[in-house]
Length: 282
Picture 1 (cartoon, rainbow, N blue to C red):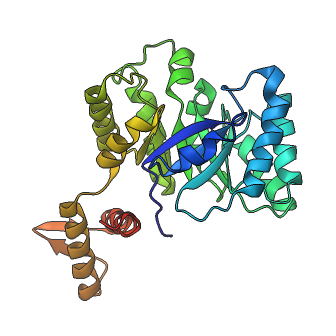
Picture 2 (picture 1 turned 180 degrees about the vertical axis):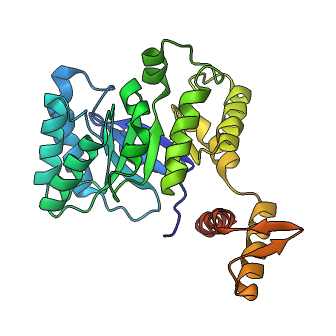
């Protein structure tokens, strides 16, 4: 399976379709049209209708991944969102599912999409205690799942902790572990201080080093820093090319490179680095 660059994402409100093209052109890898927390209950219906039309009219000719964040299917609004997607003549190519608590939610959504013959990826958000407890089952519940998103604000509230890196390290690690086990991406939540680019860079580096493959943004000006940190370096690309060539030439299951045994998990990571670098033309 070829890896896709998912270094950065940004939300754009479903009520403001004029902001969608701007988001697509700000340099992010993923743009998510928002129907959940950013939309007041009185505006949910209008935002849903606007968003569905937005995807119908979208050409989708660039490399940006389009996503619609619906409301939780445990709510009336979420069921209405999902119904609108199922009934659309041109549904969004991906759905972000908030506040996922167990694998059954994803199975239900997968079954409904399959029944309606809708080709649509899924991106569950892990942001509840129950979701964190069940994250391994959630991650493996559907082949449509391409990423696990970490919802840090709600997760901190659920855990009764602060938003610091140290206090959320356990939760983040569990999400990364579940995503890595299934070979899917893990996207960290956004850094909330727009006036602290140094802090953003530090948190991006910590997230990358922990195993996250990307991070959210709350403003386009954060995107260049996020993309820089989560892009493979020239040295990393050269190393990946070298290791994969040695493995191919050896024609065996195990090879030694620089005195180190190279096995399948390492090869998968090297291939992922090359896949992303090709898309980014590094």
